[in-house]
Image (tube, rainbow over the protein chains, first blue to last red):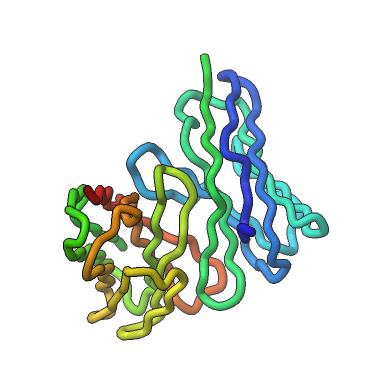
Length: 110
Length: 114
């Protein structure tokens, strides 16, 4: 199965909160990242969390990490139309590999 | 500042033709370099990564190959393209030797094999 898994789609109304979930299998993951991809472009880092942390907040973004369940989530408060994009969960495990999830397409409706 | 260049931006190639995609990084030395493929706008599959000149690790040993002839140059190649090679190819780099560094991505190459 996939090393990092995400749900494929999420639709929210503008102004609501969005929660994008990710599960991973490798417990040796040290750093976990969230990237954003706008249509037809490369990926840009949004935020990251180290595996000894449970939560990290950065303005509208909140990352929650449950190491026991190997579950990572990204909460976007007050979601705006500009937040519409594909969001990738990524982990840095052993060596120099960076593994990405399948991506979650976030659609923000008016 | 560091920048990453990827070209071409779009490419339409017939089945059976060769492929060469190039990626170069400026403003840094000894980067870790990566090639990813994103098929049909979904998922990001690691194809190759490199920690130094001539050092290539293959994750998906299909009909693609990668080379790193210079420190900041990473090339993705194929001798004969298949229809299934169509996708969005992304090059990325990271600072080597530091545990927590983000990956910086190029703008991607949209490859359509016809």
